[in-house]
Image (cartoon, rainbow, N blue to C red):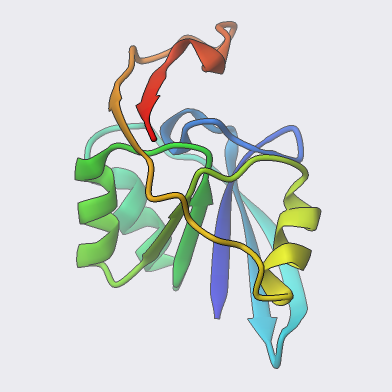
Amino acid sequence: MKMAIATVSNQVSGHFGHCDGFTVYTINDNKVISKEFLQSPTHQTGVLPKFLADNDVNSIVAGGMGKRAQDIFNSFNIDVIVGVSGDIDQVVETYLKSELKSTNSICDEHQHLKEDSDESDHKCEH
């Protein structure tokens, strides 16, 4: 099983489409077998779900994500876990303890942020 976490400086990104890339954990028998960082490709509709599907990812973790993106991930049979924040390694530990839960929050309105902007500027429906 592979879990991708939208990552900015070893933290869960507030919005999956504005992350530096994805830290992908390979998990087997409830243990992390490997961890790798995949640089994020260009953010365009549908690109990131296909990119992660092509890398055999089974689930995506992010702070926020729009409904359309969640639907596209689901069409690739990738589970979506949103409403998550914090250190990525701690998030995986929480997952391994079966304590990581999705809030099912949907980002319904945000501006496409510049690299030097504050991700907290986007609005999410929780």
